[in-house]
Amino acid sequence: MKSPHISIPGTTIFDGSEARRGYALNKMCYSFNEKANRDEFLKDEDAYCTKYGLNAQQRAAIAAKNVLQLLAAGGNAYYLAKFGGIFGLDMQDIGAQQTGMTKDEFKAKLVAAGK
Amino acid sequence: MAKIVGVVTTSHVPAIGGAIHKGIQHEPYWKPFFDGFPKIREWLAKVKPDVAIVVNNDHGLNFFLDKMPTFAIGAAPEYKNADEGWGIPVLPPFKGNEDLSWHLAESLIGDEFDMVTCQEMVVDHAFTLPIALLYPDMKWPISVVPINVNTVLFPTPSAKRCYALGQAIGRAVEAFPQDLKVVVIGTGGLSHQLEGERAGFINKEFDIRFMDSLTGDPTWATQYTDRELVKHTGTQGIELLNWLTARATMSGKVTELHRNYHIPISNTAAATMLLEHAA
Image 1 (cartoon, chains in turn orange, yellow):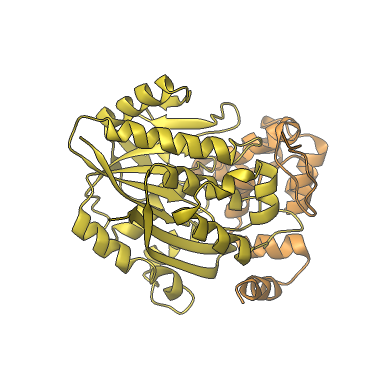
Image 2 (cartoon, each protein chain N blue to C red):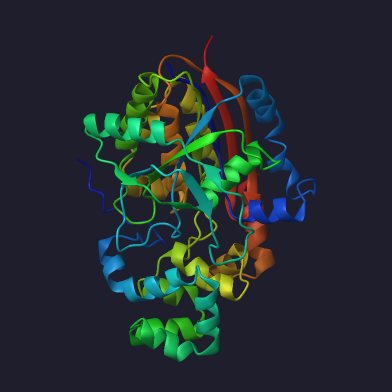
């Protein structure tokens, strides 16, 4: 059997080790499926993060709304998307932020991939 | 006896839901994607499937990491869509086919595919949007059976295992005593990656090779591990496992009736295919 653990640049595989580190953060983001929870978060971000037991790294990443930091804190893209949704961020906003591009540059990169 | 009449595969990018809601399918950004569907709708109108088995992956609506099944099957009388957190409109509910669900569960578990059975399940964009693309009036003429493949938490099931599951679903359908026409829908993909410094990764060459493989060389993708698939198609491109599972439900010679491939829709290489048994 081939080793499953190959290294892919710029990519974190969300495996058991990430899932363990990120559980509280992902659980909080999962709760954002419900509008009442999104509203509660917006009303008192600090209290909401405390309720879910975020650690200091996760709390700081949420405060910074920084996707790479959220990933580094164990966040999973699918749950983080629900956090991003609260602020109306779409996938090109999130892509641009992570790659250090403007949104237009990121969109141009996507179009170029089709050439 | 039940029979599989064909396989439809399509991307399920959430933004498609927004485009449908706004009625902007004909705008230049969206047209190349939506143009992929009239031919499939014509085929559906001709073939008139009774049931759709929908191979898809939940994105954190029904399943969370507290309990993450590798393979699950819906066995509910009805499947509702719900708020996913970022505001795409909720689509009408889908009527389940409990007889077929339980038959599949019996048959698959008997065949050593240890499915998690779900008598309640909410369905997200991976399930709803492909069906809305096929039946745009949203009056669903089909009942449904969801099959869920974990693509969220690694390890995911291997491509090889997904292929074998698809084959087992195919055998189970053919052994179902009711006269039903079954369409199998595989959703997601193709290449895309949402997260990390590699966000925006797309691999056209790999996607084309994969789509080409589905007719004559369908086990081609089973050579890859889950991590290798991420390397070639991106962290979300691994949703091609749903395509592969769906494809494997068809035995014998398969012919491609239609394909569409367009980059980009959102961050995704958006692709659609229609496969049928060769005459």
